Length: 361
Image (cartoon, rainbow, N blue to C red; front, side, top):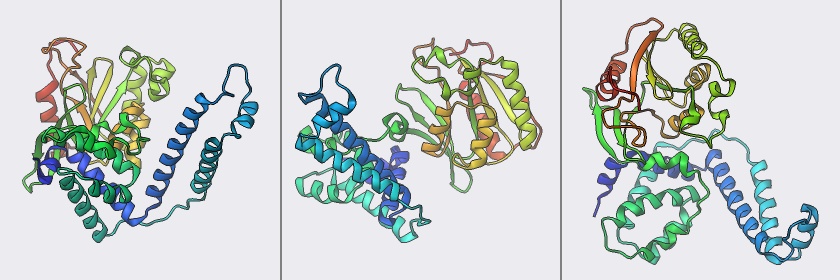
């Protein structure tokens, strides 16, 4: 049996995000209301599309208008259409509010997360009924991850987790899978403040996660590994520019924002480490700097999702041998005094993944 403290220590991203979502639900923030409404619309659209495939009027050659006119004779289809229209009206009617969770609501949120994490270790129908009525769709979706952890520690049959398995599933798994990565090493300063940690990603590779020192990922040729992802995610790939133009943009950004970047060559692009100041992954200044240099937008989303900056420390397993390097130091851009926190992060990063003579992977 895992205690709440053990789960929070091993999976801090997931637990912290669950607390955040719970606090927003309790406070009734506009972000929470909008997110839940969008989730409901996605679920209803999926149900309507699945029903459409089974209707007799669904056949090749029929126009959308004719199909809809015939489909509306089906009672279930009419009900789903009505529910979708009502949810879309609700979404349009949501007004932004400045409501933020109070300290008491944050405390209540953590207590709730602790309660249901501990309750799920000994699940029963009453527990599922209580929490099923209270939790948001997003919370129910992501505590599936916790149910996976707990099942490894118990002998309960899978059927007992039916409520979780049937929870709303209309959230971006690719975006949020980072939340359930186990943490294998944490780094604290002299005041015992966490400033970085190392986690294990979905394909079993170590990644450095820095809370306030910015890494930037620039993909020059992303099609090598991601042929199915739109080039819109990779600003430089879209324009097919020379590497010299990217380096010029980095130099210009460093000068414009009075920053200093250490630049590393990676397998398919460049990795930058900003050395002069602390950063927040969701701050507008961070987004502006990343965009100015053509940072991979999927990487930007990842940083904003977990609220840290991220750098892979080991080669991707399908690229090469264990002796391969993740990156080589290329050069520096800009001037400025190195921030002590950035110096610590650079030392961890370089010790793990910079090898001067090894091929890149």
